[in-house]
Length: 164
Image 1 (cartoon, rainbow, N blue to C red):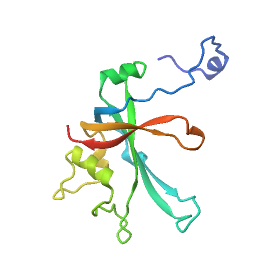
Image 2: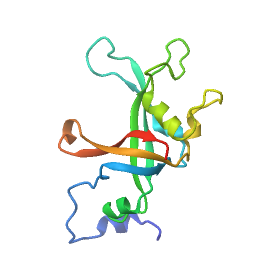
Image 3: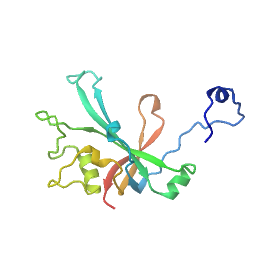
Image 4: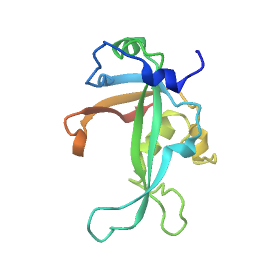
């Protein structure tokens, strides 16, 4: 790839019509892996903005990227070298310890991902960093509508993970 020249870039002209709609991964089951990236970037501490008793309190959310290993999906997405989706959720925290709460019905999506990756063994210590580059596993992609200004746009997300 040539060296990027910002001055040359801003002066380029085009007669091509720009795309106005996003391509989204078709719904279905796909073989996936997690990227070999820093998992701390997948976590975000947020503040509750909605009015109510929890307003102003903080919570921890995650957005774990997935790489879809399917040639037909890559072709459907315009021939991209890599097609990604994401697993999103909020982490339940044990209020006494500050650790992830692995109690019954807590952090189910993370538990399912750990199970799909063979990392859900109580006899072996686990931490979030073990997700880096892990896989393969089977992920189920579902579509959901956007929110706010993006309400008309559909988004593809991994809603379930299982072993291959």
